[in-house]
Amino acid sequence: MASTGLSRRRVGGAATSSSTTAADDDDVPTPRPVRSVSSNGSADASPIVPPTHAGSAFAGGSKIAFDPRDLEGANDDASRVGGKMPRLTIMEEVLLLGIKDKQGYLSFWNDNISYALRGCILIELALRRRIALVKDPNRRRVPLSERLIEVIDDRQTGETILDETLKMMKGQETEKMGINSWIDLLSGETWNVMKIGYQLKQVRERLAKGLVDKGVLRTEKRNFLLFDMATHPVADARTKEGVVRRTVSLLTATTSAVPPAALDAEGVQCRTLRSVCLACAAYTASVLDNAFARLTYEEREAAFQRCDDILAEFAQWPFGNAAGTANGGATAAGRRRQASRIATGSANDYGRESVLGLLSEVRKESTGEDDVGFELVAGVLEVLSKLDSLI
Image (tube, rainbow, N blue to C red):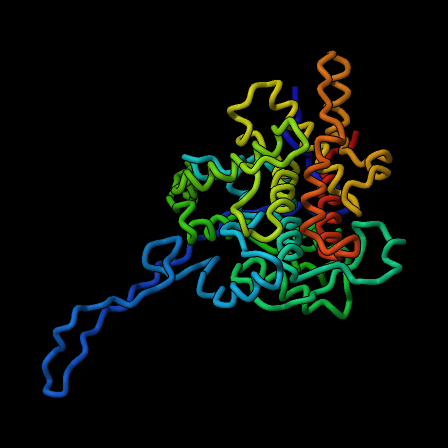
C-alpha cells in the first residue's frame, strides 16, 4: 500500500499545535447611499451609487484575509523580483488541494498540514524576496536547516498571514533564529513561554477565508451534531482544477522536460520553483490523495516516487547535489516505497535524470549558487522532508 505522505515530525518535548475553527466575524452593515443636495434644496437627480467595499467571506463585510487594495505597488514589486505575483500563494494552493470540494473542510486526521503550512509561509516570503538567509561565509559550517534568517525587505505583501509573519521576524532581528526554529515557533512547538507569542493561530481557517475573499471558496454553516462549524466548499472549480492539473502534470511527466501544464501562467515570478514547492509541500502535508484520485494504482506509485525524488533533490543546497542524495537525501517514506517495489518486482524508478530538466529551469530563476533566498527554500524543504515518523 502506497504511503500517502509523511507522518508528523516528532519534536522532543514539544507540544503539538492544533488549528481550531474560529468563530466567524460578525457581518458589517453596509452604509446607506446618500443623494447629493443642490443649492436650491432639491435632491440631485443623478443615480444613487452605493459605496464600494472590498467584499467579504460573509455578505456585507470587509475583506478578512486578503485585500487587493494592499497591492497598489505590485507592478514595482514584480519588476524587482523578476515577475508578477501569482493569484494564490503556495499555502493557499496546498490548502485547496486538501479541502473536500463539496464538504468544504480538511480531513480531521491530517496533523501534517499545520506544520507544512508554516514552512510554506517562509517559502512564500523567500520567493517574494522579503526574507533570506544571513549572508555569512561561515554559514556553510552550520546544517542547512539551522542557518539564520534575516528580513531584507519589510514592505507589506497584501497577504495578512505573510505580513504578520514578516512583522514578527522584523521585530526579532536582534536575536536571529534558524529555519527550523522559526517553523517550530510559528507552529507553537516550543516549551519556551517567552516565545509562545510567535505562534500563528488558526492558519487554516484564515487561509480559507482568504480564498473566500478571492472567490475560490464560499462560506457555509455546517452542523456537526454537538456544534456548528464554518465550512468552505469550492466555489470556483476551475481554479482548483488548475492547481490539481499543475501538480499531477509535474509528478506524472515521463521525460526530463518540464511540461507547460505543470507551470503557472507565463510571467509569474519563479513559476518553476513554485510548482516544485507546491508538489513537495502537498506531499509532506499529506494532501496528494485528492489530486491523484483519477490515477491508477501504478500511476499513483510512480507519481509518489517522482515527488520523493524531487524533494530529495531540492531539499539540499545547491539544488541537485548528488552527494546529498547519496548520503540519504531521500525521505524514509520514499525508501520504504522503493524497497516495496523491489520486493514485489514492480520497481519503476525514474532515476535522477527525470528531474534534470526541472533543476535546469529552476537554476535559471535563481541568481546563482549564492542566492540566499533559494537557499532558504532548500532549508525549509529539508525540514519538511523530515516529517516522516521513526523507522
